Length: 476
Image 1 (cartoon, one colour):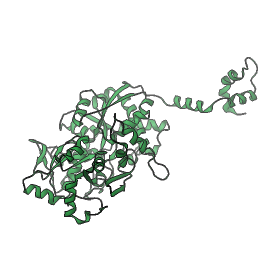
Image 2 (image 1 turned 120 degrees about the horizontal axis):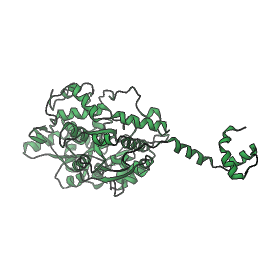
Image 3 (image 1 turned 60 degrees about the horizontal axis):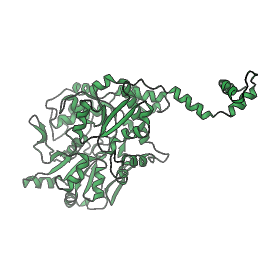
Image 4 (image 1 turned 90 degrees about the horizontal axis):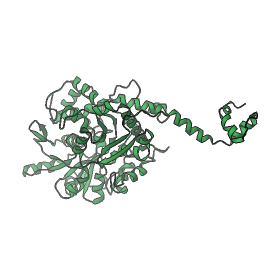
C-alpha cells in the first residue's frame, strides 16, 4: 500500500463521491491521479515559510541613480520584498547628503548608501548620527575617467598608452607631469568625486597618491580637504559628472556606473582605471538604517535583509559556463526612468561583465560588479576598518586612535549578526545553501591582502601599521 496516499482521503471522498460507502485502495489511487501534486507542494512550501512579525510593513527606501542600487530594485521588482510581507517604495534622491539627512530625520526608513556614510555619521564627521549596516550591496563598480584632452597628454607622457588597447592597470604616473605643470602655472587641476566619505574620494586619493600626487588633507579648518593639494577634489553628484567634465569645470572624476560608460558613449572622456584595479573586490555601497530604527523594527530589518540577500544572489547567478544569466534583465529594469534612467545599452556594458575603456579597448570584467559571490553582501568588520584608516590618513579623523578603537568602532556600525540570522532563515527555507554564507567561526576579518594598485598590504588587525605604511598622509 502506498502510505503517502492516506492524507488524501478527504480529497478522495470529495472527488469520487464515496459518501458513506467504504473507500478502497483503488478509490484512493484513482483520486490521487486527479490531484495536482504541484499545488500540494506549493502549499507545503508556503506553510514551511514563516513570515516574520514585521513591525512596519510599508517602507520607503532612498537611492541614488547608480547601477549598484540594483539589489534594492531587484528585491522590489522580483517580489522578494513582497515575499517577506513588505510593501516597499523606492525614491531617488538628489544627492548623498539629502539621502543621509532624510534617513536620519526619519523621512526614509533606510537607503542605498556610500559605504563610508554610516561610518562618517557614527564617528561624527559631517552630520552626526548612529547609522548601522547589516548588508553590503556590492563590491567594485567604480571607475576614474579623464577628459579627452588630459588623456591625450597622458599618452604623450607615456608612449605605451598610445595604442588601441594599452596595458592595464593604468597608474597616475603619466598624469603627474600634467598636474605639476598646472601647479607651476598657478592653475587648479580640478577633479570630481561624489562625497567626502565616499569610496570614490578614497579611491581617487589612493590612485593619485600612489603616483606621488598629493590629493590634499582635511583639517579642522579645511573641511574641503584641499590643504597641500596638487589636485583639487570637489563634490559632484554622479549623474552630473559627464556634463561637468564636458563643460571643462573638472578634468576627470571618480564615479560609479553608468557614468564612466556614459563618457565613452558621448565621446567626451576616457576611463583610465577601475576600482577593481585600485583594490580588487573592494566594498562600495551598503544598506543603511539608523540604530534607533533597527531597535524599533528588528523583525522588519531581518525581513529586508532576507529580501536583499535573495536579490544579490539573483544578480550574480551564472550558468554552467560562468555567464551571468540575469544581468541583461537587470540592466533593462534599471534603465527605467524611476531607477537609473540611463539607456539599457549604457548600463549593460559593465553589468553584463565587460567594461569599455575606449571603443577600441573593450575588456571582459566579470567581477566589475559583484553583488553576492565572494561573500560580497556580508558586512565584514575589516571593510569598515579600511574606511576608518583612510579617514585618518587624510585627516577626517583628526587625532590618533588605538587599534582597539578601530575594532570597537567597526562593531558599532557593521552588524553581521543581523545578516547571519537573516541568511540562516533563508537556509532553513531552502533559498540559500549553507556554504553561501561564511562559516559560523568567521570573525568578520577578511584575509590580509596586497590586491592594491601599489601592492601595499592591508591587514585590518594592524590599522596603525597600515596608516604608517604610506608616504603621503598622516602618520600615527
